[in-house]
Image 1 (cartoon, rainbow, N blue to C red):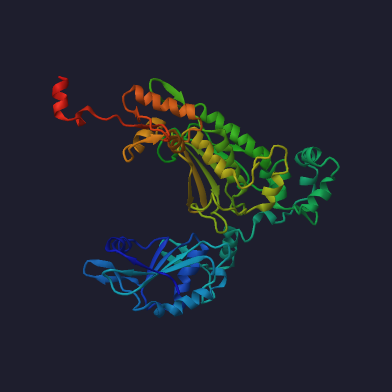
Image 2: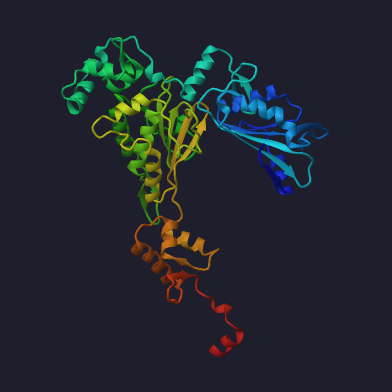
Length: 473
């Protein structure tokens, strides 16, 4: 049986003030286990979520309220537990605990359902997805197929297109690639072995990688649109600096050309600095890695192009499709799942591949932003898109971070300060301390044998005994 956690009244109220949403659902203890599986299926097939069984909505004079009314004992929930254990491949994709309160009655079963790589089918044989605060059945075969693409169970990169093999076997792109990579390779033979040419017809992956002009065959799903908005607000047509640019070509060229164009546009943006206008700059490593990710891991089944929206204070990169498999915005830096594994593998064979460290692109982007002391990228999953935002907002200066640390601590060492600020050099960190000392904000702690040198906020004269002040006068 699951562990039990006792909550204080504050924690209980925090739960009771939650609203049912895309990620939260409440169920009364009377719910039939089979009916509960609809909610479980919906969360597992979408973005994950939490279910509280034993918390229910009650209609009153003032509208709906939420009340705690749990099971009399944990064993009373055995039927629910049994159904969960038998629910397809859910086994290791949920966590459960009982919650008890110091003041409320009964045990609440708290389920945390994780987004699964597989499709979870409810007890009624139907598949459900979560939309806002509702669990909705997947209506038809087309919608179910769409879900398979969303979850990465099926990849559009393997779809066979009704084109002749020469579209990729006799293209300049594949000939140059083979000369650099496999000089003795014959295009048609090599492409067939890689399964991007099947029965003498190219797949989507083959066209994207090796056609000289993929956009003529896969319109609206193989280009990158770059838009420049002269505003810090939302994207509106009135703020466009120029007509949207459309970048085209095979994926390798598309990525590098788009990064160069975005960088060129950004370098034309200025912001007000301390005493003059300064050029805005984002690390090219971050731009490159995030744009590469958007192109390689997007859902090509969706007829929409990757979009790069450049604002005065940020860049938004929109990649069509939801995150695949079990990937969520929270775990994306710690897990790997390639929606288009063939594209990822084959583009890595090019000279100077855009995905040099496969699986490490996002971490590289975060590190690159940190080196320029800019805030880290923000990753969101919106309706039908994954959006990564790079904001031109600085983290606190090293000086400010040191002073903020000393609000709660009595002293700070060079090592602690370097870990705090991200500064690598011990001497560079000393320079920060010296600047703070010169402005009277820091002083060095008197040296003690065996203890590392440290700094502190100067002791205030006002803290000295009044008699001493009189004598000094």
